[in-house]
Image (cartoon, rainbow, N blue to C red; front, side):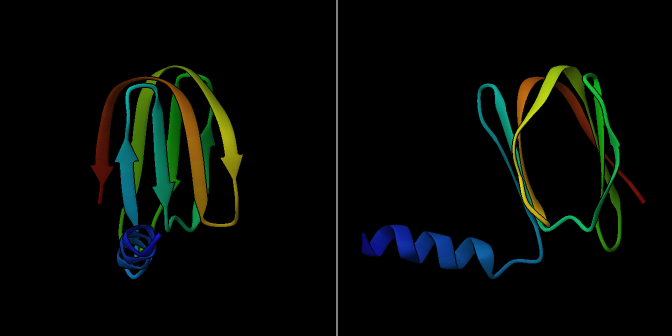
Length: 80
C-alpha cells in the first residue's frame, strides 16, 4: 500500500494531470467545463483550455475539479 500512497501524493501535488487509457480519459485540476457533448469536451484550466474530440463520450465520474470520461478519443489540443 505504501507505493500506492506515494504515487497518489506525487500526482495530487501537481496543479493538474491528464491520464489516457484505452477507452478512458481522466483529468484532474480543471476549473470549469466549457462544453460537455458526446463528440467534444472543453475543459478550462487556469492558463489554458483543453479540447478533447472523439465520439461516444460519457461521464463516468465527476467532482468539482476531476472528471473520468469513457469514449473513443480522436484528438486532444491545448488552446491558449
